[in-house]
Amino acid sequence: MEDINITNFEGVYEPAEDSWLMSRHIPNFEGNVLEVGSGTGIISIHLARRGHQVTAVDLNPKAVQATKFNAKNNKVNIEVLEGNLFSSVQNRRFDTIVCNPPYLPPTEDYDDPELALAVEGGPSGSEFTINLLTQAKDYLNSNGSIYLILSSRMKEFKVDWKRKVIKQEKFFFERLNLVHFF
Image 1: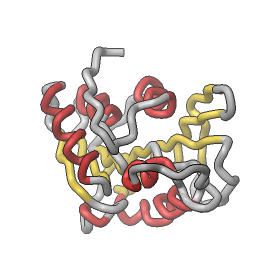
Image 2: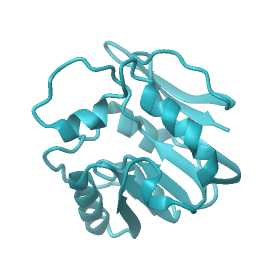
Image 3: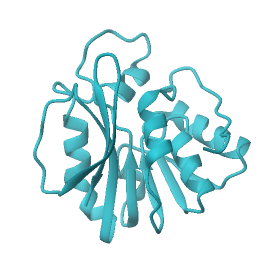
Image 4: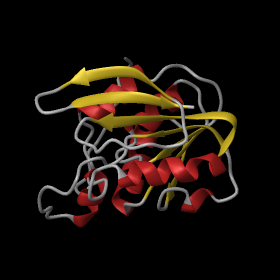
C-alpha cells in the first residue's frame, strides 16, 4: 500500500487495526464516495489516491480538522464536512458509502466525550450501524453499495441488505470483518 502520512489529533480516533483493514482491503469500485465518520481521514485519503471524488463527514469538529489537515498533507482533494451521519449531505447521492463505524458497547469512561462517540456504537454496539444502514438508501445512487467494518463484539442485527464478507482478521479479543452491503 502506498505511503500515507497521518497526523493524529487529540480527541480523534487514531487509525487502528479496523481502519487499516478497510484501507488495505476495500476492493476497487467506480464512482463518488461518502465516508461517514472520517476520523483522521486515512480511508478517505486512500480512496482519493485511487482517483475517487471523496466527501468525508464527521460529527467531531477535531476530526474534521484532522481530515482536512491530513488530506492537504497527502496532496489529495477531499470535501470535508461536519455533521451527524447524513445531515451535511442532504439531497445528495453517492455511488458508495464507506464507514468504520463506532461498534463497541459502552465499556469504560473516556476523558474525552468526542473520542467516546468515535468508538461506542450504542448499548449493544450495533445501534449506530443499524441507523446508518436504515438511512443510507436515501443517499445512494441506484446500484450503490456500502462497505463497513463489523466487529464480533457487536450484537448481531438484521437489516434489509444483502451482505458479503470481503476480508476477516482475528485479533486478541475480536474478529473484524470488512463487509460489503448491497
